[in-house]
Structure formats: structure tokens, C-alpha cells
Length: 264
Image 1 (cartoon, rainbow, N blue to C red):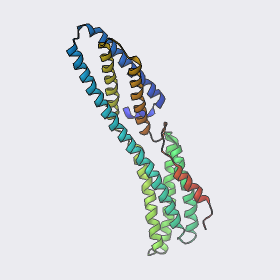
Image 2 (image 1 turned 90 degrees about the vertical axis):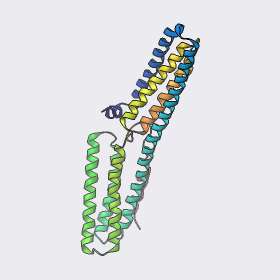
Image 3 (image 1 turned 60 degrees about the vertical axis):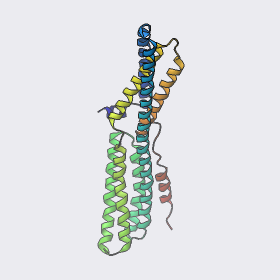
Image 4 (image 1 turned 180 degrees about the horizontal axis):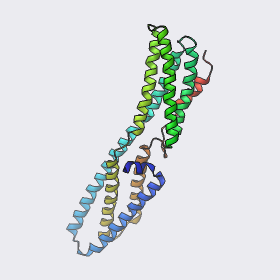
């Protein structure tokens, strides 16, 4: 539930809300520190500073761990675009070995299929457009497969038909892999923990500032801004269809232009 809400919020609204929470935590912690400053001795202040350093280290570890998870998922999605582009291109080349009329029919279907796959990505998070793109993809799979079956019935021992079906299977499987990769997000509990630890950590920073004689507001606000920015990038990497960082579809675009050229 939290992941669906998080995914639906605009990234800049999420960034502003989280940054406001961090600023509020710093201010609340500072006021609490000011209130008890007169009754806290130097030994207690040293103990607070030690706990503050430990919590900051914990937050740094959690940020690095979560960033690594979201980055690995982003790289997987990017790699699958390359693999799907290669699979479609290989299927197209092997389709040129098929007899007519299947050769022309399959070639035209594969040209259209690249456009369907681009429409699938351009659909973004619109459920209607996503459903339509998925239906077109599955329909294209059935039409291309029916041509492969027709060729296989003509000569089931043909090597050319076998290698074409092999690449076609891989192309169809990559659609399922991309769907799985799109739904593979960083677990919700990690994001909840990340937000809570960030807010509590900066609250402790504000508390430590309140115990001191002077307050360095610029440094604490800068730290809050940097933490919020890192979390923004982590959340953005975990959103494959929206946000600032998106998976490039240039390989499929290049393939579409290549398939439009006359085949020798």
C-alpha cells in the first residue's frame, strides 16, 4: 500500500514534503535541546554526540544500501531493453530465411512490433494505455507465432525454421522479463525505514545543536537538503516509467529506423 502511494506522488512534491519533515525534525530537536541544556552536564553532552555520530553512520549505510538496490534494478531494466532490441533484430534477420509468403508477413509484423514495444514504454503509468499496449503485444506474439507454425508444418526438419523459432521464443520471453523488471521495486519496508531513520537522525542533530552554545543553521539545513536529494534520486531510480531518470529506449528507436530501410 505504501509503495503504491509513494509511486503515485510526483517526485518534486515528495521531495518538498520530505525536506519539510527534515527541517521540522531539526527545529523540534533544537528546541528540545535548548530546553534541557541547563540541566545537561558535559558528560551527557559527550554521550549525545557519540550516539549522534553512530546514528549518522547508520543513516549513511542505509542510504548506500538502498541506492545500490535501486541502481541495480535500473541497470537490469536498461540491459533488458538492449537484449530485447537484439532479440527482435535477430528474429528479423532469421525471418529472411523463411519461404514466402511468411517471410514478408513476419518481416512486416516485426516492424510493427518495434513500434508496439515503444508505445508500451511511452504509455508511462496510464493504466488504459498500458493495457492496450500489452494487448497489442500479445496479439503480435500470436500472429507471428502462427506464421512460424505454418512454416514448421511445411517442413518440420528445416534448420532455418528451427533457428527462427528459437529467436522468436527469446523475443517473447523478454517481454515477460521486462514486465517483471518493471514491477521489481525496492521493498516498501526499506523506504519506510529510510524515511524514519532520516527524520530521527536529523532530529538528533538538531538536539545536539540545541545543547551547544551556538547553532550552525546553514550546515544543518545543507545536510537536510543533501539527504533529501539522495532519497529523491533513490526513489526516482525505482520508478522506471516516470521521474527524472528514465530507461533510454534508444536501442529500440535505432532498430525501428534500421528495419524501415529496404532489406537487400
